[in-house]
Length: 258
Length: 210
Image 1 (tube, rainbow over the protein chains, first blue to last red):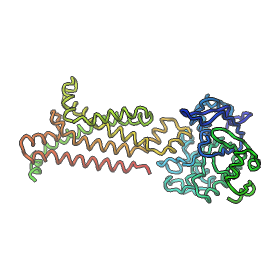
Image 2: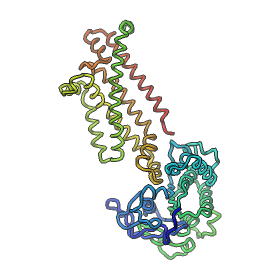
Image 3: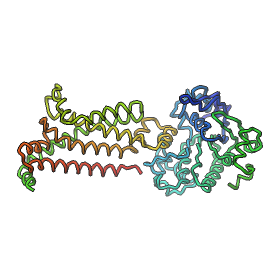
Image 4: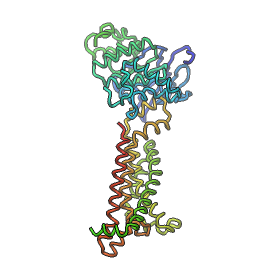
């Protein structure tokens, strides 16, 4: 691991992103601290996913700068940058022609780890993500949705990145499986302490997982608050979101329930 | 079944013509794959070119084969030997299915798979070799299969310009108004086409991504 550099771990400075005539992000400024779980909350099309992809440079800003760990993204070696960032998406995107073990071991393999070390790491990750060892030889199509997403998380963690980007990772799961995975994510995060940027449109999920919640609307960061403050916020957008989710929500109540 | 008698009596010649036929088809398919697969990969990644490349291959496909053979005949080095010319023409015809299938095979890969590969830091060539080609391989092979089946049929016409192959028996039979001689060329050609179709089909199934 690199020497920690003081200051925010991920930083957006006045970032705008345009596609053709559409302004997807405008004047976006955001700081993510080391070890926090920053949840980007917002409706579809609010620019959450775009923000995430600007971090691992799947997209490049039209103007402004993104900094990761004290280095301007634009100057970073794109392959090195991406291999140091775990990426989990809703569709998972496991390689259908690789078995679970090869999927999990992908980045270590690309990084040229010796085979025994990769194997040990795969066993470790299967255990960490609550998967049975015999799953290692299965193929993605033989897994349930929850198992696939666990493999997705294991794959993202494989080379021990400091940053995890998660794009609605639990969005396509049934409520019970989602609940399991959210709980496991919290436990995992407690022990690993990664810097996580987590995208969701589910307020309940945001309150449960986030150390801070950034609310996005039409390509702008409306407000950024802790979960408890979010519920009490007088910001019209935040209040509208809370209202849309009905009954009074508070983080203590959602913790064990949902 | 007098054509079977004819084949038996002339088995040496039939065998030789079959070998010639295979040579024409095999070599032209090889060249077509050599050109078509990279072209298909190129246009799959550079969609701005896809219409013009596929369009050109399409136009080539519509030129009647006999006319194409005729057009190429006066070309210096090519016209010297009929088999060169036949191989070139067959290669041109085989391009379309190979380019098109390579293109659709790669475009058809789940976008999430490619995106997660890229997001994890695979280089473009790692993505191509470890993800895109393996996942598109069965579709690409089915293009090759179509190309081979078309070529086996088209190659019979190459006999018209003296390139040899089983078409020679067909043309001879036509001239002699002797069905058994025509069949002695046509049946082995049909069998070749079926065998190639079946064989590549098996390979395709084995490479089918799960």
